[in-house]
Amino acid sequence: MNTDAHAVLNLALLGRGFDRRQTAAVLLGSVLPDLQIAGFYVLEKLAGTSESDIWNTRYFEVHHHFDWLNSIPLAAAALLLARWRRWPVAQALFAGLLLHCCLDLPFHNVDAHRHFLPLTSWRFISPISY
Image (cartoon, rainbow, N blue to C red; front, side):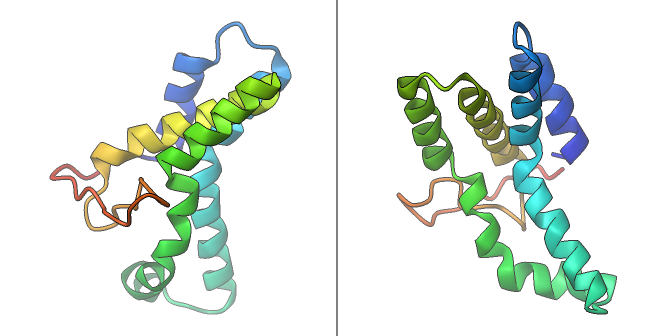
């Protein structure tokens, strides 16, 4: 999914009844995994890497680093911890992150993440790609 679609869907599904801080946390959680990739892109461009090399070579050389923020078990564990500790802003953040991961799972093909780290390195290679 595209970053803006994550933001819109997460806010529509999770953003009701929250105060401003919680709404901002949902929004941050919904885009956090993609912000990491955007940061990678900016650094590569600043280093002079061509578009082709960024997305056809470099992205796949470091792709595994992006998987940790796309981990469903880690996001779920963090959400449960925040709920147990009664941290509403953290709950909103990790709910947004978890929903991002769940929405990405069926839409990544060649760039599929390892959504179940650290339990397994298996990737769901979707027949559908965003």
